[in-house]
Figure 1 (cartoon, rainbow, N blue to C red):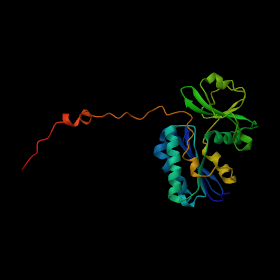
Figure 2 (figure 1 turned 120 degrees about the vertical axis):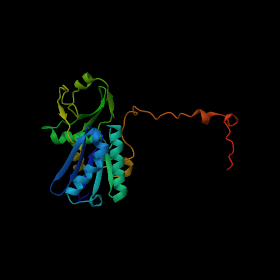
Figure 3 (figure 1 turned 180 degrees about the vertical axis):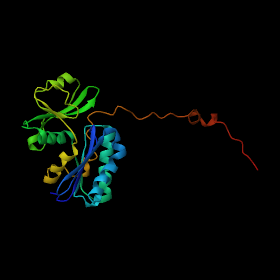
Figure 4 (figure 1 turned 90 degrees about the vertical axis):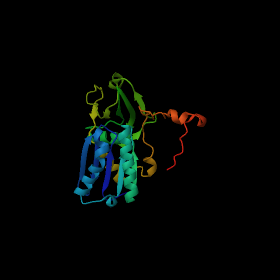
Length: 237
């Protein structure tokens, strides 16, 4: 189990967060999702500089691998890989569902044995998975699902945890998520964390991106047969 400083960040959620675990405290910075790609490195540098550390001084680096923002996840996982390559510090990633389960366990007054961790998929849809927060966020066997109707989510008989759930009328109650990065640190410290680059190259998207690669448009000049292309006269000086 790592005994030195630990760095964790979540870039797929609506609240992007970076947390640094030191011997006597946990320092955290947060920013809105749209600023993750521009400010993540600056946030990491600010926390390390304030503690008088560099990346190579860390004992471990952890990231959330989704589901969540496509761009945010790519930025976060690529940053984790880059930090590992530059410093040699071991790195790994947890699913956002697992981090949400840990978040719930830390904040619920009397945590339930099973909770519904949800991620806003936008346009009235949610990604959800049943989790057991009492055993380090272990997932139920049914796997993640997509909920396409808010009323279906509000009929949940399980407590719900996630960003943006405060407005839901869930009979079993809802826990509004805030910064998730600090909730990865205890698992990184106690050894209940999947270290390894393989976790960083498999983001949990759950749905294809809404955009597609642009089609290749060939110019008329390129599509002409060689015999049809205009010849250039040789020039002599």
